[in-house]
Length: 431
Image 1 (cartoon, rainbow, N blue to C red):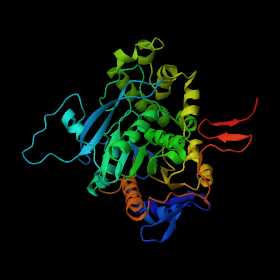
Image 2: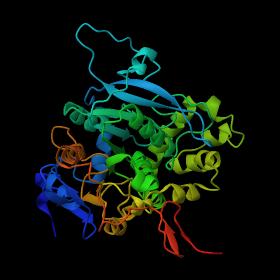
Image 3: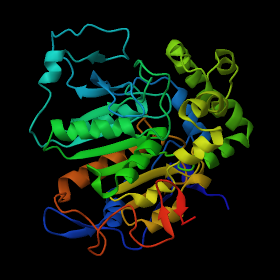
Image 4: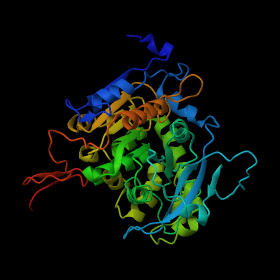
């Protein structure tokens, strides 16, 4: 039956969660639950009716849009990981330059991005209690991405601090080891969060991830379990089950020749910026890399061998966050569109959300990938993210750790075999 609701821009919103989600204590003393909070604050999804399906919504992101003007100062961190050394860049949101104040543009950095001086960075620490948002961008993106700035702008206008963890090699950052980022690479965000906790001991920390960054953030929250330093986290347009989303793209001409080819082209350009360092890995051959046309081909000849996977399929299965979701022990919100042509609806872990009382999924039947464009150019998901973050910080007493039935919230079960380990995606049994 014809549904005329799209003519008015009305998308259908659905909430998926456990029967009893975690209880939350408000600062006023009133009790609520995570699912009630999400339902209360999620705005109605009203989109541009001229962009009436996921393909049009997603392709509209290619239209050049200036977006909110966000200024950053960058700090390059040396990785402390024993297996994956190297460096990564974190961009911190800073106030707009004052009238008459001139910041010299650096062509080696994205627009409106500058390096901290050593003196400035030494003074960055603070004992204030401002809420702080940590952002993780999507595939081959960075702090400059318009979709990310649509979230950062209103949140910082509300008085929040914010930083963006740029994946290795992205946002014009340099690499010092022959590896780019990958979809399971949680170590840089973990190091950043630990540094933030030490440097800003009184700031409540929150996080949002976009697309591939949402997959990384989900894995990070799961790996840290009830020890996670974040007060809450949000995953926008997470591809969830990477192998299922990958195979969904292979089934259509648009999936192959538009989305797979575009993502492949973008990551080949990223490789070209770091070619000299990347080719120090004897497993890589320049001619094989330049012959790639699609994202999965790049994953096959670059990502799999540089990270130790035998195939791109093994990489996807290991890096996906669909199982890890069940190990999350902080308030967690997923936002996905069912017509997302990149993050397939078949990959969305509806049943896993029903099993974890710490997580709530909001899906819309329309919106595309990191799009949800409204009339006038705003993006609905940015409003949904802002509303959730403000409610969690302003109204919820974060000093009370939420749990279920008063039980300990350990990510690894203590029962005898069989043991389900969601972070390693294997049922552990004695051999």
